[in-house]
Length: 526
Image 1 (cartoon, one colour):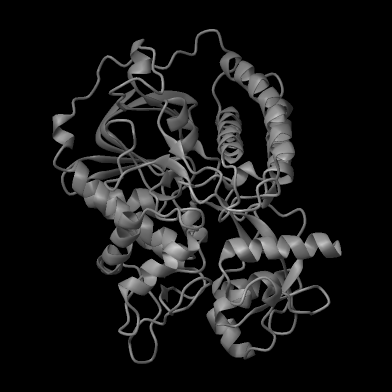
Image 2 (cartoon, rainbow, N blue to C red):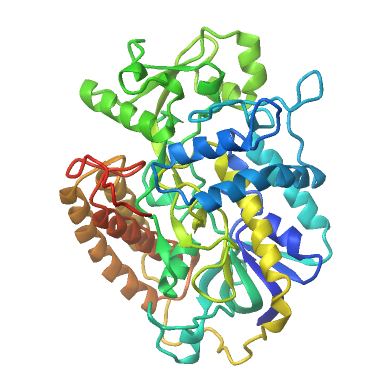
């Protein structure tokens, strides 16, 4: 079946849905989500969204904090754009129904997180992402110009390659005409033709064995664009959240928000000793890259499997009021955070790189935009400042919409795109071939491409990944397409990009730390 839409949005988080709401006033929109709309990284964002909204804060402070966290690799034009446009986008989120917590005077109840010099984090208790996600879903469901295709999986974007042309990284004028989409309920592969496509598929956390991301975060959009020969950048900068709840065997790991350290939580070793002051003058409020490496170092030196976050010195009722979801989750594991220290360990959390885009959200492929965690805007540089990602998504959704709306009617549908060809394929003989390979990718990425890296580890990871790549490509071309084989194919592609770009960076900077090149390179660029 062939579907035709002015705008095709692949992904259901804040990046895709806010773009859809902005362009639906002038065109017909399809949102494709491989799970229900609720199951996106946005939903699990506990901490909040950063914006200058109070009189004692200012844009210059927020800009300086972002640049400092980014390790010298942020694009200053992008930083200024996001910071200065943030307040207007906060107002639009509120107009869509998002409810941010306020104090008794009616002003925003602002939190502070690591790396921020002021309280500027708007939040909804400790479930800000869920509040934003559900509010946007309500707006999406009510909009007559937006069709939602949940339980649909994007396999490939459509380019000249599907018209018989050989496409390389040097081919000029590559364009995106839509995507092949698998209906997971019928197992049919439909052709979605679009004038404009927005890639908003989120992060890559499931490439790692331990992650705070929902298991849908398999880097699908990045892998699709890379296979279409689009430009991918900054993949070596994988942010490991310092404080995921340590509970072996549970995947994904439950996130203990950074706001808890801003609230007054202190990191301690298992025997109750503070340690962050050894690593940074800001102590437990240091940026995430510093905190994650410090925890990793303490765990390795002591032989412990976790450290602890202590909020037992804070007012118990206040703690429960600020962090109700964390309190209940920990209590379900027998941990009363008002009396017990919380066992925590780093877990893969956020990708600062991705599909390279410009100030308008345009990728290197014509008619294709990217936004959210799958995009590399240049805002985060070598390390994301806490709570900057959600505001980045709405600012760039606005930029992409403003750029696309005057142009989209000039883009014709490519009616000559052939239907998906499944000739000569059969169902995979054993699912174990997919599940075991998936497990192997996570193990090698966590073991060799984690918080601390080395040339030896990276080369070993690449050697193992090349074997898995050859096996999986052979299986993909012989098998009837399924979500499982596509996700495996995607995490292998993303793992390859992370390793390749980590190998190319002969320095330690931000989130990328290698024992072979422990110092930053003064000539480094993103």
